[in-house]
Amino acid sequence: MHNSTRWHVCEDAAAVATEAARRILAAAETAIAARGVFRIVLAGGRTPLRTYRLLSRATADWTSWYLYFSDERCLPPDHDGRNSRATALAWLDRVPIPAPNIHPIPAELGAEAAAAAYRHPVSAALPFDLVTLGMGEDGHTASLFPGQVHPVAELTHPIHGAPKPPPDRVSLSARALSDACAIMILATGAEKKGPLAAWRAGEPLPVAGIGGTGGVDVLIDRDANGALIPYRL
Image 1 (spheres, rainbow, N blue to C red):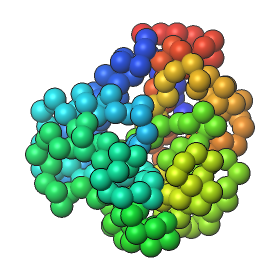
Image 2: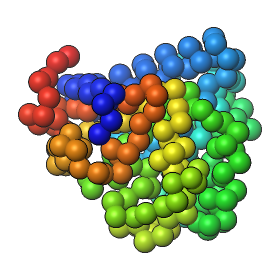
Image 3: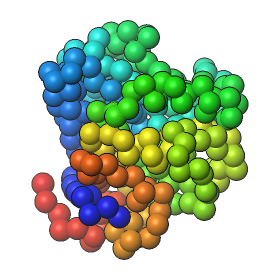
């Protein structure tokens, strides 16, 4: 666990989503004011969708946003299991972000080809302004799973044998995910208590391997927290 990991306990999953949306919009304003663009990596999975729905109703300088994905499943582009499709339905199809600003992972090409194709867009975007991530019940983040070993110098990894379907995926590497001005990790629900406790105890979970110069902010709800951290609004 990085020493600069900051833990924020919210009342419930809705409060986590509200705080996450607030932080994303604030980071966008800061980045656009400083550099004219906002480069964000989007978390996949179920947890962030509530945040994305809030963002779909927000007002922002959407034409200055550039979006990348932390990982993707090797499925057809219109498959309901694709992170890019779920994010589009919840948020991106509802705001005027120019299509060229959205960089989905072409995972339909297969893990190796898609990972190779995504390395250039990632390299060109570094450092990201904000990386958002979730955490699985086994402590995985993006599609970086416990027990898997990847070349540390890579920016993207082809993933095979993922312990949850589909087995073939593409993931940004720990190196790429850590090359960011800010990193925010969301975890909600009682099933996250175990991995959060293991993370705080120093176990080498994939999620614990993400950390940038600006530190990591972890937003959790009371169900995920249990008795780990004294609760504060």
